[in-house]
Length: 263
Image 1: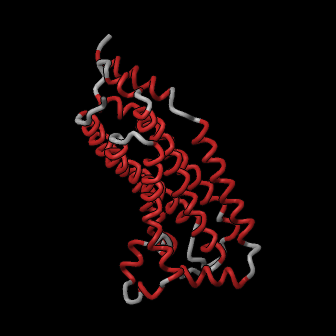
Image 2 (image 1 turned 45 degrees about the vertical axis):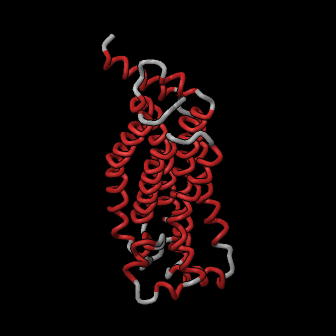
Protein backbone atom coordinates (compact mmCIF):
# COMPACT_ATOMS: atom_id res chain seq x y z
CA UNK A 1 0.00 0.00 0.00
CA UNK A 2 1.38 3.42 -0.95
CA UNK A 3 2.09 6.11 1.61
CA UNK A 4 -0.67 8.30 0.14
CA UNK A 5 -3.21 5.48 0.47
CA UNK A 6 -2.08 4.83 4.04
CA UNK A 7 -2.50 8.48 4.96
CA UNK A 8 -5.92 8.56 3.33
CA UNK A 9 -6.98 5.49 5.29
CA UNK A 10 -5.71 7.06 8.50
CA UNK A 11 -7.61 10.31 7.85
CA UNK A 12 -10.76 8.31 7.15
CA UNK A 13 -10.24 6.30 10.34
CA UNK A 14 -9.97 9.45 12.45
CA UNK A 15 -13.00 10.94 10.69
CA UNK A 16 -15.07 7.85 11.50
CA UNK A 17 -14.19 8.21 15.18
CA UNK A 18 -15.11 11.90 15.33
CA UNK A 19 -18.19 12.40 17.55
CA UNK A 20 -21.31 13.10 15.51
CA UNK A 21 -24.01 13.26 18.15
CA UNK A 22 -22.69 16.39 19.86
CA UNK A 23 -22.62 18.56 16.68
CA UNK A 24 -26.04 17.28 15.65
CA UNK A 25 -27.47 17.94 19.11
CA UNK A 26 -25.87 21.41 19.18
CA UNK A 27 -27.34 22.28 15.78
CA UNK A 28 -30.81 21.16 16.85
CA UNK A 29 -30.61 22.87 20.23
CA UNK A 30 -29.23 26.02 18.60
CA UNK A 31 -32.14 26.17 16.17
CA UNK A 32 -34.62 25.48 18.97
CA UNK A 33 -32.91 28.14 21.06
CA UNK A 34 -33.44 30.68 18.27
CA UNK A 35 -37.13 29.78 18.05
CA UNK A 36 -37.48 29.80 21.82
CA UNK A 37 -35.86 33.22 22.07
CA UNK A 38 -38.33 34.55 19.52
CA UNK A 39 -41.28 33.15 21.42
CA UNK A 40 -39.96 34.65 24.67
CA UNK A 41 -38.76 38.08 23.54
CA UNK A 42 -41.93 39.04 21.70
CA UNK A 43 -43.74 38.68 25.04
CA UNK A 44 -41.40 41.09 26.83
CA UNK A 45 -42.91 44.40 27.96
CA UNK A 46 -42.48 47.21 25.41
CA UNK A 47 -40.23 48.99 27.89
CA UNK A 48 -37.76 46.09 27.87
CA UNK A 49 -37.71 45.95 24.07
CA UNK A 50 -37.15 49.72 23.98
CA UNK A 51 -34.22 49.35 26.37
CA UNK A 52 -32.56 46.81 24.06
CA UNK A 53 -33.18 49.06 21.06
CA UNK A 54 -31.52 51.98 22.82
CA UNK A 55 -28.63 49.94 24.24
CA UNK A 56 -27.64 48.45 20.89
CA UNK A 57 -28.89 51.24 18.59
CA UNK A 58 -31.53 49.04 16.97
CA UNK A 59 -34.92 49.65 15.40
CA UNK A 60 -37.75 47.14 15.36
CA UNK A 61 -38.45 43.78 16.97
CA UNK A 62 -36.72 41.87 14.13
CA UNK A 63 -33.41 43.59 14.88
CA UNK A 64 -33.78 42.90 18.61
CA UNK A 65 -34.46 39.25 17.89
CA UNK A 66 -31.52 39.01 15.51
CA UNK A 67 -28.98 40.38 17.99
CA UNK A 68 -29.87 37.49 20.29
CA UNK A 69 -29.95 34.93 17.48
CA UNK A 70 -26.41 35.82 16.45
CA UNK A 71 -25.18 34.75 19.87
CA UNK A 72 -26.38 31.21 19.11
CA UNK A 73 -24.49 31.25 15.79
CA UNK A 74 -21.34 32.16 17.72
CA UNK A 75 -21.82 29.95 20.78
CA UNK A 76 -22.80 26.65 19.13
CA UNK A 77 -19.91 26.14 16.67
CA UNK A 78 -17.27 27.38 19.10
CA UNK A 79 -18.15 25.06 21.96
CA UNK A 80 -18.85 22.10 19.68
CA UNK A 81 -15.39 22.60 18.26
CA UNK A 82 -13.75 23.26 21.62
CA UNK A 83 -15.25 20.11 23.16
CA UNK A 84 -14.05 18.06 20.20
CA UNK A 85 -10.54 19.50 20.33
CA UNK A 86 -10.26 18.91 24.07
CA UNK A 87 -11.18 15.26 23.61
CA UNK A 88 -9.01 14.69 20.54
CA UNK A 89 -5.89 16.51 21.71
CA UNK A 90 -5.78 17.67 25.34
CA UNK A 91 -7.53 14.73 27.00
CA UNK A 92 -5.72 12.31 24.71
CA UNK A 93 -2.41 13.79 25.80
CA UNK A 94 -3.52 13.89 29.44
CA UNK A 95 -4.22 10.15 29.23
CA UNK A 96 -0.96 9.42 27.34
CA UNK A 97 -2.81 8.32 24.20
CA UNK A 98 -0.90 10.67 21.90
CA UNK A 99 2.38 9.22 23.06
CA UNK A 100 1.24 5.76 21.96
CA UNK A 101 0.19 7.05 18.55
CA UNK A 102 3.37 9.08 18.05
CA UNK A 103 5.43 6.00 18.86
CA UNK A 104 4.14 4.63 15.56
CA UNK A 105 5.35 5.98 12.20
CA UNK A 106 2.83 8.85 12.24
CA UNK A 107 4.16 12.37 12.02
CA UNK A 108 2.77 14.77 14.59
CA UNK A 109 1.50 17.19 11.96
CA UNK A 110 -0.38 14.35 10.24
CA UNK A 111 -1.94 13.27 13.52
CA UNK A 112 -3.06 16.81 14.34
CA UNK A 113 -4.53 17.39 10.89
CA UNK A 114 -6.35 14.05 10.85
CA UNK A 115 -7.90 14.69 14.25
CA UNK A 116 -8.63 18.39 13.92
CA UNK A 117 -10.16 18.76 10.46
CA UNK A 118 -13.23 16.57 11.12
CA UNK A 119 -13.88 18.53 14.31
CA UNK A 120 -13.60 21.90 12.57
CA UNK A 121 -15.86 20.57 9.83
CA UNK A 122 -18.47 19.50 12.37
CA UNK A 123 -18.28 22.92 14.06
CA UNK A 124 -18.70 24.64 10.70
CA UNK A 125 -21.74 22.50 9.87
CA UNK A 126 -23.26 23.29 13.27
CA UNK A 127 -22.80 27.02 12.77
CA UNK A 128 -24.17 26.88 9.23
CA UNK A 129 -27.28 25.03 10.44
CA UNK A 130 -27.93 27.59 13.18
CA UNK A 131 -27.32 30.44 10.71
CA UNK A 132 -29.84 29.01 8.26
CA UNK A 133 -32.36 28.61 11.07
CA UNK A 134 -31.73 32.25 12.04
CA UNK A 135 -32.28 33.51 8.51
CA UNK A 136 -35.52 31.56 8.09
CA UNK A 137 -36.97 32.24 11.52
CA UNK A 138 -36.54 36.02 11.29
CA UNK A 139 -38.78 36.24 8.19
CA UNK A 140 -42.16 36.29 10.02
CA UNK A 141 -41.04 39.29 12.09
CA UNK A 142 -39.79 41.45 9.21
CA UNK A 143 -41.72 44.58 8.34
CA UNK A 144 -41.30 47.07 5.49
CA UNK A 145 -38.40 49.40 6.18
CA UNK A 146 -36.73 47.11 8.76
CA UNK A 147 -33.00 47.54 9.22
CA UNK A 148 -32.48 43.76 8.88
CA UNK A 149 -33.25 41.08 6.30
CA UNK A 150 -33.20 37.30 6.05
CA UNK A 151 -30.06 37.44 3.87
CA UNK A 152 -28.31 39.70 6.37
CA UNK A 153 -29.31 37.42 9.25
CA UNK A 154 -27.87 34.41 7.42
CA UNK A 155 -24.72 36.33 6.54
CA UNK A 156 -24.25 37.53 10.10
CA UNK A 157 -24.56 33.99 11.42
CA UNK A 158 -22.04 32.69 8.87
CA UNK A 159 -19.63 35.49 9.74
CA UNK A 160 -19.74 34.60 13.44
CA UNK A 161 -19.36 30.92 12.59
CA UNK A 162 -16.24 31.76 10.60
CA UNK A 163 -14.97 33.88 13.50
CA UNK A 164 -15.57 31.00 15.93
CA UNK A 165 -13.62 28.65 13.65
CA UNK A 166 -10.76 31.12 13.46
CA UNK A 167 -10.61 31.38 17.26
CA UNK A 168 -10.51 27.58 17.52
CA UNK A 169 -7.69 27.45 14.99
CA UNK A 170 -5.77 30.14 16.90
CA UNK A 171 -6.10 28.04 20.06
CA UNK A 172 -4.63 24.93 18.45
CA UNK A 173 -0.90 25.71 18.92
CA UNK A 174 -1.62 26.21 22.63
CA UNK A 175 -3.87 23.18 23.03
CA UNK A 176 -1.29 20.76 21.63
CA UNK A 177 1.03 21.75 24.49
CA UNK A 178 -1.55 21.34 27.28
CA UNK A 179 -2.20 18.29 29.43
CA UNK A 180 -5.06 19.55 31.60
CA UNK A 181 -8.50 19.59 29.95
CA UNK A 182 -10.03 21.78 32.65
CA UNK A 183 -7.42 24.51 32.23
CA UNK A 184 -7.83 24.26 28.46
CA UNK A 185 -11.60 24.69 28.84
CA UNK A 186 -11.11 27.79 30.98
CA UNK A 187 -8.73 29.34 28.46
CA UNK A 188 -11.04 28.48 25.58
CA UNK A 189 -14.01 30.02 27.39
CA UNK A 190 -12.06 33.22 28.02
CA UNK A 191 -11.08 33.39 24.36
CA UNK A 192 -14.75 33.01 23.41
CA UNK A 193 -15.87 35.65 25.91
CA UNK A 194 -13.25 38.32 25.18
CA UNK A 195 -14.69 39.46 21.79
CA UNK A 196 -18.10 39.98 23.43
CA UNK A 197 -16.84 42.45 26.03
CA UNK A 198 -16.93 45.52 23.72
CA UNK A 199 -20.63 44.78 23.09
CA UNK A 200 -21.31 44.56 26.83
CA UNK A 201 -19.71 47.99 27.23
CA UNK A 202 -22.54 49.40 25.09
CA UNK A 203 -24.99 48.56 27.90
CA UNK A 204 -22.99 49.68 30.92
CA UNK A 205 -20.70 52.41 29.54
CA UNK A 206 -22.09 53.67 26.22
CA UNK A 207 -20.16 56.91 26.69
CA UNK A 208 -16.94 55.01 25.89
CA UNK A 209 -17.92 55.01 22.21
CA UNK A 210 -18.93 58.66 21.97
CA UNK A 211 -17.17 60.13 18.95
CA UNK A 212 -15.77 56.68 18.05
CA UNK A 213 -18.34 55.38 15.57
CA UNK A 214 -15.77 53.54 13.44
CA UNK A 215 -14.30 51.76 16.46
CA UNK A 216 -17.77 50.82 17.66
CA UNK A 217 -18.66 49.36 14.26
CA UNK A 218 -15.40 47.44 14.09
CA UNK A 219 -15.46 45.65 17.45
CA UNK A 220 -19.09 45.21 18.52
CA UNK A 221 -21.58 42.48 17.68
CA UNK A 222 -24.49 44.80 16.74
CA UNK A 223 -22.41 46.00 13.80
CA UNK A 224 -23.63 42.93 11.90
CA UNK A 225 -27.17 44.20 12.40
CA UNK A 226 -26.40 47.84 11.56
CA UNK A 227 -24.68 46.84 8.31
CA UNK A 228 -27.18 44.25 7.22
CA UNK A 229 -26.56 44.60 3.48
CA UNK A 230 -22.80 44.14 3.93
CA UNK A 231 -23.29 41.18 6.28
CA UNK A 232 -25.32 39.41 3.57
CA UNK A 233 -22.18 38.98 1.42
CA UNK A 234 -19.34 39.35 3.91
CA UNK A 235 -20.65 36.43 5.98
CA UNK A 236 -20.55 33.79 3.21
CA UNK A 237 -17.20 35.16 2.01
CA UNK A 238 -15.71 34.91 5.50
CA UNK A 239 -17.11 31.38 5.84
CA UNK A 240 -15.16 30.40 2.71
CA UNK A 241 -11.95 32.31 3.43
CA UNK A 242 -11.59 31.00 6.98
CA UNK A 243 -10.60 27.57 5.63
CA UNK A 244 -7.07 28.52 4.47
CA UNK A 245 -6.52 30.42 7.72
CA UNK A 246 -7.53 27.34 9.70
CA UNK A 247 -5.20 25.24 7.53
CA UNK A 248 -2.32 27.55 8.42
CA UNK A 249 -2.84 27.19 12.18
CA UNK A 250 -3.46 23.45 11.93
CA UNK A 251 -0.04 23.20 10.27
CA UNK A 252 1.55 25.42 12.92
CA UNK A 253 0.00 23.29 15.68
CA UNK A 254 1.45 20.17 14.08
CA UNK A 255 4.93 21.69 14.08
CA UNK A 256 4.53 22.81 17.69
CA UNK A 257 3.60 19.26 18.69
CA UNK A 258 6.63 17.91 16.83
CA UNK A 259 8.88 20.17 18.88
CA UNK A 260 7.11 19.45 22.17
CA UNK A 261 8.35 16.84 24.59
CA UNK A 262 5.48 14.31 24.64
CA UNK A 263 7.01 12.07 27.26
